[in-house]
Length: 163
Image (cartoon, rainbow, N blue to C red; front, side):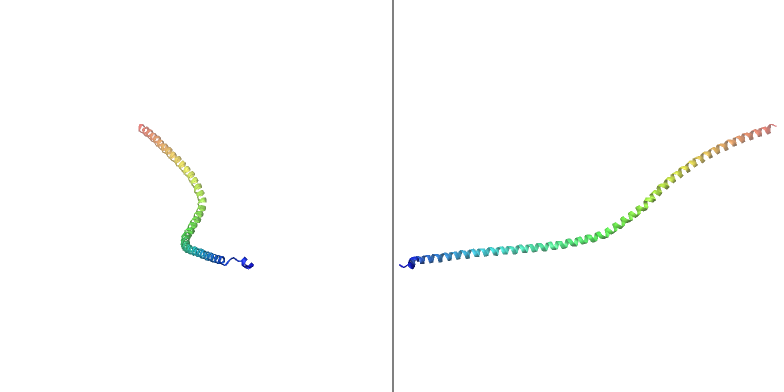
């Protein structure tokens, strides 16, 4: 045996080793292929699920956009309804403020005139009572005067008859 022969294994062993390594390679390749196909299957499944999720998200976004448009239309309708009312309310409030400003001095004038009226009415009633008293007094005096004159006339008449 030469040194080359000594460093190399015998041919039978070499075959076994080659067949073992080729068997291992085939098994490794088979496992690698199997793992690779499993990985690809998982990747395909993941991609398929991603697409499903994207489709659901798109559908949701479509519904959200539609609802957003619908709500924007409703808001516009509400604002258009509120605008004329707001203007009318503002106008009425300004008118109320204006009338209030006019009412304040008028109220003061009314109170002053009412006081003057009450004072004038009191004075009128007092003078009316005084007049009634004077008329009553006048009637009493006239009545007494008539009685006295009648009495005098009677006396004069009696005195004429006697003579």
